[in-house]
Length: 238
Image (cartoon, rainbow, N blue to C red; front, side):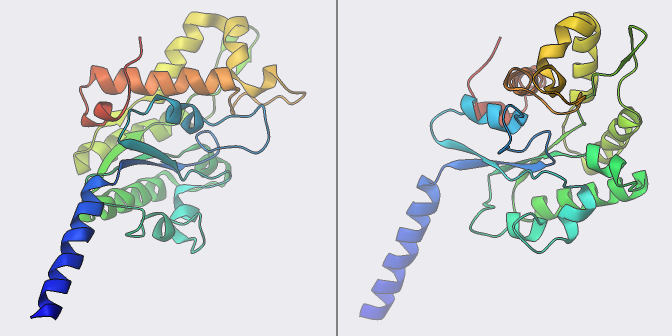
């Protein structure tokens, strides 16, 4: 009888601990989102963590150099299997997927991109985790004063929408939104958001702290506009 009572007590304590644990927003993607040890480069996931409300935590699992395929197959801390361990992934959590730039660089086919995203979505859903897809942010590329953006990134965005429609998950279209802002701001005023403005490199893919804040707030505004449940995790932005 004492053993039964002890087992019941342990079960109740576990349940209370789970209920008291914060809801986690897991960010899984590449260096555009990831934390960085090379300032001033800043992932937008780093900025997003600054907007969480009490009771919610951002877990930035995005990693530099990661593609959908390497995330799916790696067995170390960068891999999907590690990120989704029961101690990390809990029912009621959220996962935000932000891939595209490294898929392009590593010549991973669009079809494989879609297959990998589908795998992540279905696996997360099977664990009771809510999924939000994002399209890859646009690159700030101008030629002769005209904005041209990054090669093929809009094609990746189209595949994100196709997967989202098939799997019935929401999309935050960071590609279209960042494109619109760059076009509105123009070449000079959009420059401070990208690393090329703060380094000697010609890096118009990665973000500065200002750029990370720009994309994080873009994500939050669009989530609020769509009235997505994930907005309950964050304070509102104008």
